[in-house]
Length: 136
Image 1 (cartoon, helix red, strand yellow):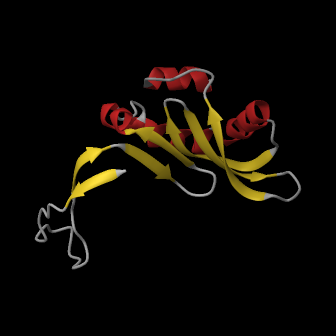
Image 2 (tube, one colour; image 1 turned 180 degrees about the vertical axis):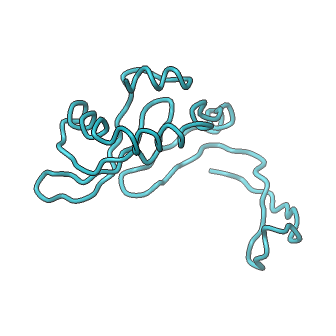
């Protein structure tokens, strides 16, 4: 549960031009529930949320993903088949963090179609060199 204090900050901010848009300040966070779509949900305590830090891979994740998608698409297909055990085609990395990557691919099992798969790294990769080490 999140308690809100209806502290309106400003309706004159240049990027907020909506009459039905308001800012609120959270005074206390008891827990956080994340719902990110089908089969993607979770939760953390308020303390875990407040103590969380940004993922250290975030500043360069898109560059790594783009490089892998453009130059090593065949390797992404091979990693999915090897580590997840699912034959795929047209695989590409759609997100990357210190714990692994989310891959969108065409599943070649019973005409399943396109799906997103989570491929965890074999160990945490807290920096750019570590990501390269687990991918290569």
